[in-house]
Length: 357
Image (cartoon, rainbow, N blue to C red; front, side):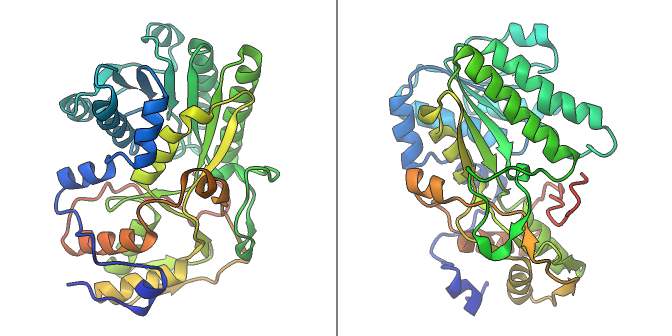
């Protein structure tokens, strides 16, 4: 049984919503359409194609779009496109009435054969492995966006980017806004800025309405920054606090906000930071998990004065605060880890300050 702590109270944590008891239940929770998604689907006609749908977030977004369409106009299609190196991922999507197509997005001819769709959500990209194979990262993050933009020049495109395009800012600043100067740290972040610039070029050249989603750390009980910290505390490993502050958002809310960007697509592209509205302390989060997991937090290092932080004020103003609070997420993660539920075993390396992935 988890006990309410002072930190829980300060962060608005609640024990009201029960934790998911299985991966199936978690998937349903993650893909529940928000009121904003349902309203967006009512306004946005036509099929939705999700490119790069086989990653950590793609299945959630595709299922959410399908469930929203089922509630509003069930005849329209959701088409998930990926290499689908794991056949199970495609099978599970089809079981949710999402159509799947196996396609290598680096293959221009294969992309040309993909079906038309008025609404495109582009999620493909590469982060980890950049240090060992920078060419592949630049191909995925800079060349593939050009291929996609040319193929879907007559569509509306929402493209995922990252808060890594911003420089580090003081912890007390509230984070970088969409209008602040960009300053990517490291090759991965530079390739993501290239993606944004290339998409902007195509948007202006072909008058393709686009929205760019600068995501800063989606989380759920199987992976994410909060899981990284909780696992280290649970396993007795040191928690490096040199990256002392960060933002996170529930993966379901992140997917919802991306879908909600469809009506905002414009030329030049509409840009939105998608993350939580709180600046979280690495040390405080470690202390919380130490308390509820009954393990000591082994702290390593000292907080630097700056961090990679995004300001989600525009998102909150246009679309509201995230539906799921950080406090609720932490309660669910602690319960998930205590019960020994499955994890994705994909560390975020959020503590990396040199941009090396």
